[in-house]
Image 1 (tube, helix red, strand yellow):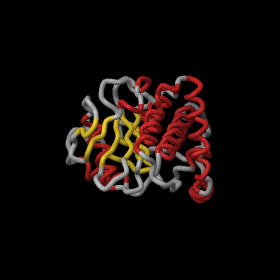
Image 2 (image 1 turned 90 degrees about the vertical axis):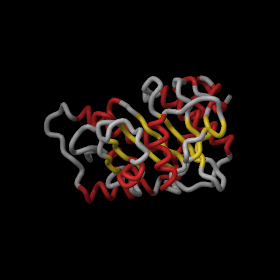
Image 3 (image 1 turned 120 degrees about the vertical axis):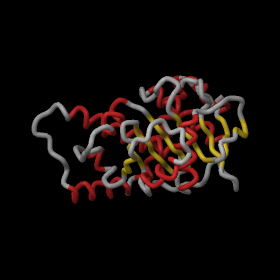
Length: 243
C-alpha cells in the first residue's frame, strides 16, 4: 500500500464521503447497509463512519460520525450500524496501516466469497491479489464484539479479506488506497463470475501470478492519480458530497 502523510479530518471527511458516492455510482451499495470508515489522526483511536439511515448517494462529509473504539459517538447526531462498528473497530484497533476500511455486499463479491475456492487466478487483475487476501468464516451478523479477534486473525497483514457467505473487505493507508483495492478486487470477482460459464478456463500459474503481483506493487504510486480522477468525475456529476 502506498504510504503518504496522514490527512486532516476535513480531507478524510471529504474523501470518505466521496467513496460512498462513488460506491453508489458503481452499484456497490446495498440500500442502507455496508459501511466504510477512516481512522482520524490523534492520540486517541477514533474513526469516521456513515450514519445509519442514509443511502450512500446521500452521504455528505458533515454527515459522518466520529466513533471511538468503545462504540461511543463523539461527534454526530445519529446511530451507526452495529455490525459495522464490530468490523471496523476490529481492524482499526489491530492494523496501524489500515487508515481506511471498506466493506461491501456486491453481487460478484458475495458470489465468490461463497465459493469454496475463493478468488481464482484467472486474469491480470486477480494477480494483484495473489496471496494478499484473507478469508473469514461466517459467524452470522457481526453483532458479537468477541468476533473482532477472529476477524483480525483472518485478515492478517493482507490488503483485503473475503467474509465467507457475506462480502468483501479492503484496507488501505488512505481512502484512495482502500477504494482502489476494493474496485479491482470487485472487478476480479466480476471476471471470475463471467468466466464460470466458459469451457476450458485456466488459471495463471502461481509463480507467474506472484511476479505480476510484485509488478503491481511497484505501481502503487499511481493510486492517488486514479483517486483524483474519480474525484473530478464526482465534481462534474454532483459536488455536494463535500458539504
